[in-house]
Image (cartoon, rainbow, N blue to C red):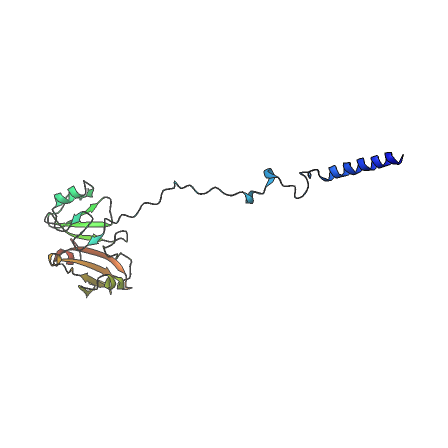
Length: 206
């Protein structure tokens, strides 16, 4: 009888030991499984490397005292048409004395034609800069910083502003000018580049 009790106790001890080694139920703890992980713990996919960068700005069309883009002061009107590959808007009746034509892709640029020749270029928008970086809307003081040599000033004919006149130092270009018109508030309103005397005409072709 004592031997049977001993066997019974041994069997019960083995049963308890086996039960304590069994894996915990999946319903214990927080109750989270792989299928129920919070969405915040899931990493977002990396951005696609195939996204194209924005196009670089067109830096070919910058103004100097001798021209802008493919347009050169002194070139014939037919040369201008060829340089722009037909991308030129002209008045129905072009005045032989003085008139303006306009590159269709750059409406901020007006090209003065005098005697069938490019005489000057007028710019009235911030979209076209000079080669040194001056733009319509900039502080007038920037012109003195960008053009420390060959700069002179004159009072504006109609306002309390000024004309800031840049004369190139290169001997071949000394008959050309860059002229910035400034407002009474000290900002660039518009500017022009071209040859003397046409670049000095305040009213353009008027």
